[in-house]
Image 1 (cartoon, rainbow, N blue to C red):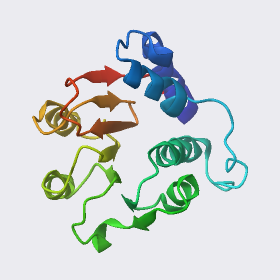
Image 2 (cartoon, rainbow, N blue to C red):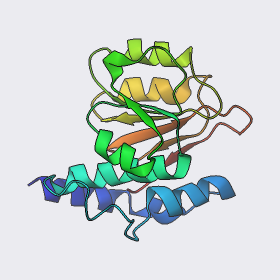
Image 3 (cartoon, rainbow, N blue to C red):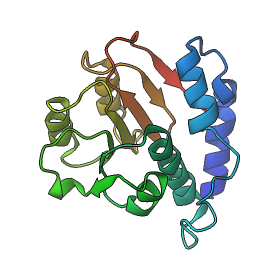
Image 4 (cartoon, helix red, strand yellow):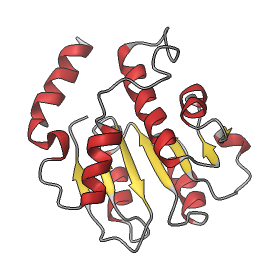
Length: 179
């Protein structure tokens, strides 16, 4: 039944496939070659062998983001193996152990305490910080607040998660992507 729901979501977002309608070359490149990359990467065979297909799909996205961004500090709960495989030199810290340093990449689940973590993060971000919000459809109003916030820049709605950039030199834009 879960696969049928995922198929329905994919079909409903079909017009947002592979960067259609994205005018920014940077954002188009990110969608085509990081978010929706279909070629196998070097660690795919060793990562998440016991995971179900959906966790593998998200984990591989996080792997590609870490591989593309090459972060020094990553804050995440539950995705350490994928993120560490994407960038060997990254220090991956769980959310409770975060000592308020500026993260380069942060994977934050939507849920209890999300707004508090987001407020802490807003005070620490720079232009290079990338935030990935898991489960944006659990609380659509909170996700809309994140997109509308003046501190955020380019945002991507992948249905299962959202990606937020904080580079204020770029024009604020929100994209819906079929992932």
